[in-house]
Image: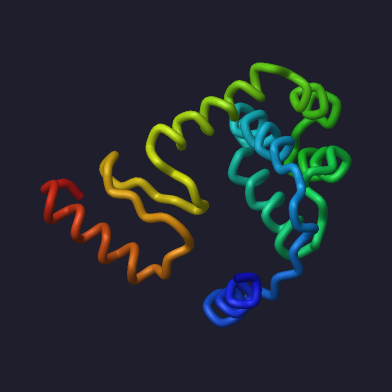
Length: 142
């Protein structure tokens, strides 16, 4: 799948992928995301982590890499490192995992429309537009 993903990124989005190592533990990055969201820089952190992994070939399982990213988006490095070991942030991630399982999500990305229409995997924009139109037709909601 990686060659296909690289082709799509190049052709549709003008991005050259240079992915990080395969099989890493991304849980620290997810915990960091919860901390960043709580401090108002979730989107910036998310974008920086994705860029680090998919374009800069960095290991986002490495806490030093994540701490550097956190500092770059305005988070206090010491507080960020402490959050990576804080059980409340781990529980927030674990709760997300349980919710995804309860909804039947088993792939990423995944989008759930109107609480019951699931689209799994990376889909082209026109497909998402068609699904949204169908959901609107069936539910009467936009």
